[in-house]
Image 1 (cartoon, rainbow, N blue to C red):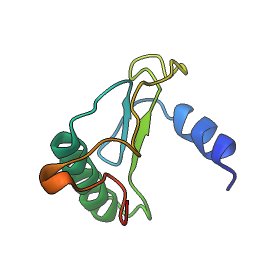
Image 2: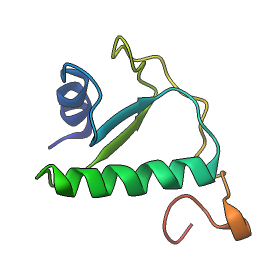
Image 3: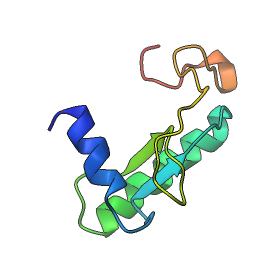
Image 4: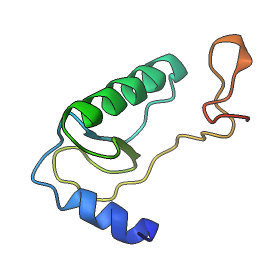
Length: 86
């Protein structure tokens, strides 16, 4: 599914759920990692193939608001990147 279509599909959900979370700005790698783990586990328990943590979307209105998160620059514990291999 093309990214724009996927984002639009997720925004059309009635609300966030155990497998879907919208965030505007959160640059704390530890917190992001915890969200990713929880969403992944919850998606599995809910029978979903994927969990989603989508940045730049208001969690109440689902409007596109943008984000200042720079995932390629953010570093976690031990200077580890947010993305595998980065």
